[in-house]
Image (cartoon, rainbow, N blue to C red; front, side, top):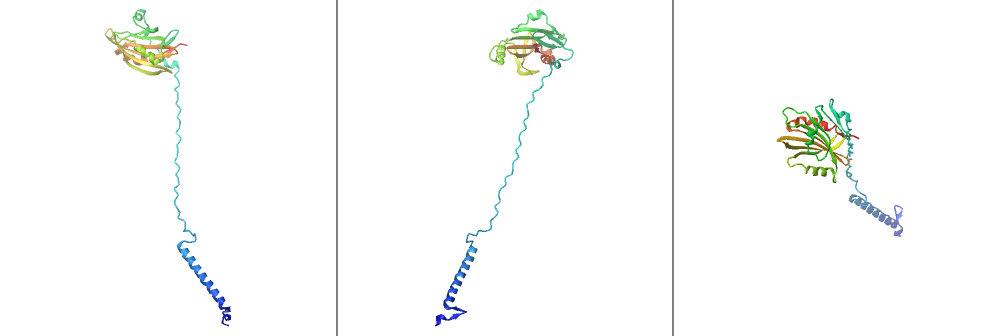
Length: 234
């Protein structure tokens, strides 16, 4: 009855079963350790911190909008130098130094004009000057598509010996104008003419200052100041 013999309180069959289970358990522990060393069973290694690039905010400066400042027109009275004389008709007004006075009819009749003469003044000249200084205001209706094209056509009508040395847009007070400088010879005398063309609705106004060339540049600042006092009487 060897089969019924007991060892440690268990039969031989029970000991065999126990030994088998022990072997299986050892095998499982061995496999678990092996997989752990190999990174098995889905266990991952400690995560490595991957640096993440942080965006640096870029400063955006909104440009400051500077409004265009419209210059305040100077009051008309402040454009008149102290001691100057007013010359006024029913249509226009102009100021000049006292040395200028209304021109005589004989001199004016010799002045060829296409535009209608509204005002004519002569200035006292130096003894060395052979040409009488002359200031005139005249007008004519605007014809054509534009002011510039009209003036270009008018310049084309000038005598061949009249040379245009300057033509540019300017602002007189708050009024736009075209400034001209002409050079010519009259009776073998070099003469310059400073002229301003103003557009007033459908009317073109001319304000001109004529003098012998040497006096012209001496008087130029006065001529330019006088032109600022020109205005159409409303």
